[in-house]
Length: 118
Image (cartoon, rainbow, N blue to C red):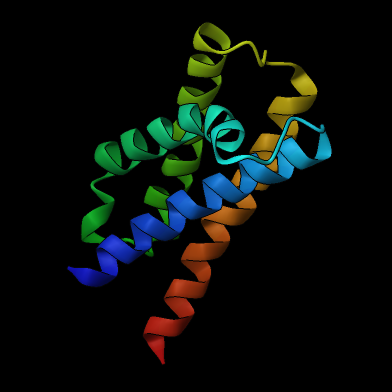
């Protein structure tokens, strides 16, 4: 059970890192509230993705659960960002967010798989 909680926490931390990197690149502020304002839509999407895929039963699975988590995190995050934040949803942001979140969330799963096989 503990490694499942750690896996979810790692995913959440990676979403926060994604938000912090974006804020840094766009001079949007690196205070905790600034980062949270960017991260919260994607954190909600991440939790939704974990619920949809029941990832607590297989936290390191890349296909299909990991990919679905990326898609749900991204889609829900963009919808929430569009309707509930002033950040906007430009195509360039969607593309960068897709590449970054896929790399982070799928990469974490690949590392987890490699570590659990040893």
